[in-house]
Image (cartoon, rainbow, N blue to C red; front, side):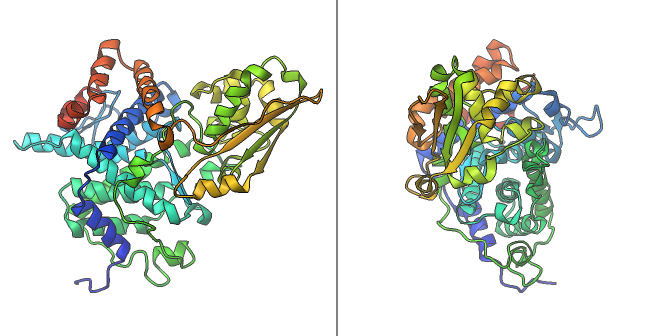
Length: 475
């Protein structure tokens, strides 16, 4: 039976963008290259952690898929759906890849799991048929568009206030671009997208007390793998649902958003990729990044006076209070890396912050909870306004330490973290160093250098075929 309903405009807008819009801005492609570099580097570092690696590989041990997707940093060769989960879980595990902050937040590079999985699979199938594979330029284009879809949807729509997790937007964005990569036409993209919205989203339960846990590290991989599956079904002819969002009583908006419409505040272009936030220095939830920078600056003043501290004042923005202001016991690394007080305490105590600081050995140090107990967290209304102001999009925090003798440090305030667009050129050398160091944890020196030679050169990367690129990441 032919669907005669009016198709939701949001589905049309996304499909038109994915199918017809040309990305032309050099800045978008250059930033996408750094995102690719940074995201895969984060995945390589995550492979040091058994809690991550135990989730990877085939469902049936020993299974291999001829001409399947290679999983970077491993010897796994999997179907694209499972590969998307593997890659997605790796790159998100340490909470160290890029970030987008708005009314909804998230990590648009999470889409790379599904994009790379599909690109390698499709390209290897094409080569087997004597056809041309995708180039890495095509992957960068898909990344820019996935970033844009996820990020623009996040600007005006707060799914977290409805208790829904932001990985919904990973599923939507990956579904759209992967359906197109699979050869889908405009209607295929609309059909696949409608099913992604009908899936809705997982609850944010696993990100918050008392249930904060490791699912937050594989939730995006789960969303990306589901997106690849929905895309595969759509190009095989599976139907869609024209009013998946707007249908009265049964649509996404009525069921989950109390009838509020999912809106777009600006047209799709390459705005999100160009304004993406990198986690350059610390694997910490982004609302607390500048607080950690402040704490590290204060470390030399306080490291020898820890027993004399009377109070620690953290001034921040509303979103940080809502998401990462935590008191009381913290039960695991996933709990700790989403605690503003914990990450600030590590900065004051150690003068640095890395992934190992969230593990049990460091967390057992009683000085951390002692410092946390002395902290007060208050909102600065101007900080909250600047966080949402499109011309600023700052993530401000301020920290000061007060001693029992009545003295105090200066208040250190940082408005923009190192990974912000306003500090992009300053950050680039550090991003390259971060990637190189992360890859050294997985590959021998020669392989690291060969990978960096490609990643640091725009033209070499863009012209490389996806299979050749993925082959370089094998161990």
